[in-house]
Length: 412
Ligand code: ADP
Ligand code: ASP
Ligand code: MG
Image 1: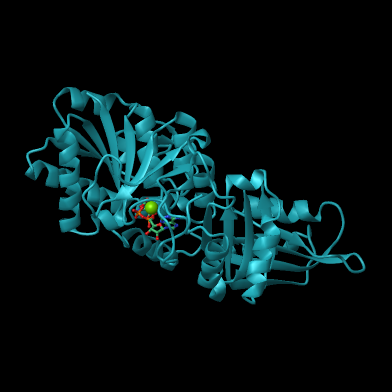
Image 2 (image 1 turned 135 degrees about the vertical axis):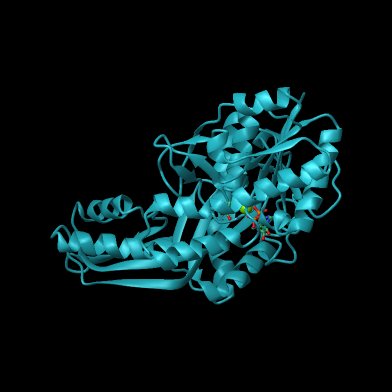
């Protein structure tokens, strides 16, 4: 039997009615003759609630216990989906990550998948089960503890299953009908893409476009998984949604093909550090050892051998960053005057493989932002993207202005 992976995100399983609707969609594929692996997220809002409870209980939590708590949302939806399918006379069984088992490393809250031995599930398919419903986002460490794969991790569960079972396709059902040039919720002119390259999807995802978790795109690219994003709220055809494909399959593309944003950024300045070899290494080693994912970095011009070091990191890692900086100072490894934290920032990025061959994109981006009176605080670039850190209150304005000026509403 050919295998299909279908993943339903939080809004697609937000209540019993929606689970029924998703189950019907699964039934359509079963009727076509597929063995189906369904990956479910927690009901919409559930994971946020669980994360909130953990933070309230223990701000610098033990990540093993964080995983024990936040993985639980998916257990509920997996069981409910299996029951709903059974009510429709479709032989279905639910699986938690450890039961499959979905084996990960021990990097709690950000674990990476190491292996998915398929024989337990395959044996059930051989016995007549038609649908394996698997709780997304979770796995089990070598120590036998529950792990989670980072926020949005059910997408990665889905792609990893598609690779492990040689699935014909991995369909990601969500609350938008595909991948757009930017988030359609903040830009009404956003245009749905029929296809997007892995490279561009990878950048958009890593720069904040939540529609696919970055790691899921990496895995799909590596294992050549046919990956599709589509809506669980509409009747679907075989051509619906957006396909993520190899670069060669995209005939024409705009220089800039998408705009992404991330609200979840904070800027921290380590004020008055010495400008000498080893200082940056001390700061960023301490941050990395403290579990802080530093993103953008700038160092001021020094005056009399003293400078400021500024970096950005996710807002929920600021407490860890402060702790790490104070610890190196207390240990006598670093001197600085103070730490300044700015929570009111966001990152806006433009992405496009066309940037490899065309110059002037950065200059145009900066001009568009300056015409809107938006001040840029930090800049980073790579081969196919340019990112800026700006005040959060200008986020929507910046995304819309860039989308307009780069004419993303028009196809190439
Ligand atoms: P799910 O719960 O199904 O995993 P997510 O909330 O994680 O859904 O991701 C879907 C959301 O991603 C959409 O509702 C949309 O607001 C957001 N999004 C951000 N950028 C894009 C984009 N370029 N194209 C489509 N959706 C996007
Ligand atoms: N429920 C998890 C989250 O909200 C995983 C997912 O939905 O992909 O991050
Ligand atoms: Mg998601």
